[in-house]
Amino acid sequence: MWNSDELDLDGYLTRLGHEGDRSPTLANLRALHRAHVLNARWDNLSAYLHGDVPLDLPTLQRKMITGRGGGYCFEHVTLFAALLEALGYRFFVVQGRVVMGSSKILPTTHAMLVVEFDDGSRWLCDVGFGASMLEPVELVEGPAGVQVEQDAWTYRLRQQEVTPGAVGWAMYQPAQGPDTDDGTGWMVRHTVTLDPQYPVDLRTSNFFVALSPHSPFSRRLFVQRVLPDRLYVLDHLTLTSSHPDPSLPAEIRELEPHEAPKVLADVFDIETSEEDAALLVAKLTAP
Image (cartoon, rainbow, N blue to C red; front, side, top):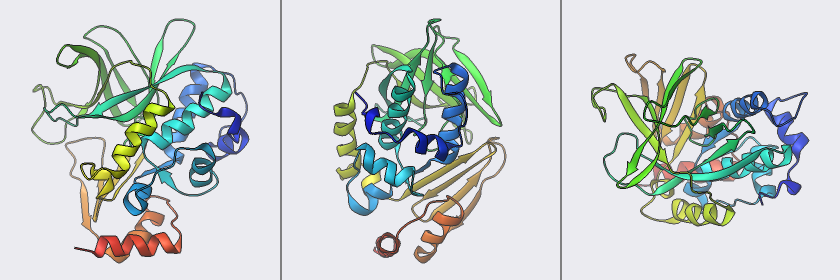
C-alpha cells in the first residue's frame, strides 16, 4: 500500500545511521523513529516556494534521503510508512488536528502512524511534527494516560474527548507562558482519532495544506529542527532557539531576507539549490 517496493531501503537506513538488526521490534522502532526525527529535516519549502508537494517515493527519496532537503508531515509519514512496510511492521496511518492550545476545532492536517505489536500494545509515531517527539509513545487507554521523558523533553498522551462527541487521544507538552488549557501547566499540541488513513487521504489533505490560501504553509516560511536539548524554529524571518524547560527564555533574532539560505544551511542543515535560494530571498523580500 505504501509502495515500499520503490524504497531504497539500504540508502534510507544509511541516511539514518541505522546498522545491524532490521527485525520489526519495539527497540528498533524506537531507534528508527529517533534517527528519522534527528536526521530528516522539517520544512515547508516546497509548498512555500513552488505550491507543489509531491508525495511519490522517488521524489521524497531524492529530496530527503540522497539530498539535504526537508519536508513536512505528509512527506515524512509517507517515507516512514514505506520504511515500516519494508521492514514488516504492522501499522496504520492516522490524521490529527494541530491544536497548540487553541479552543477552536481545527482541520485534520497532521499525519502520524500507529504501530501495533503482538502483545496488544499500540505506539503513536510522530516523525513529521517539526518539534517531533524523539520516540514513539504508547497509547495507554484511560484518562490517566502516560507521561514520558525523552532526553530533556516531556510529553503526556491521554485518552479524552477531542472534539464534541468524539473520543480520541491528546498529546500534551509543557505550556510556554502563563496560559494553559486546563490550568496545570500543560498544553495540547495535537489530537487524533484512530481512523485509518490511506495514501489517497494524505494526498487530499496535502493538496489543501500546500495550495489553499487558508493554509499558512502556502503563504509563510516555516522550518524546524529538534535536538535532544534544543528546538530551532524559523517562522518566516524570525529565528527562535528554545529550551525544553519553558521557564527558560528563548533566544530570538530577526533575519534579513538575504540571510535565510545561509541560516537554512548552518542552523537547519538544509541545502537549497541556487535557484531556490534566489526565489526564497525574493519571496521573503516581497511586501
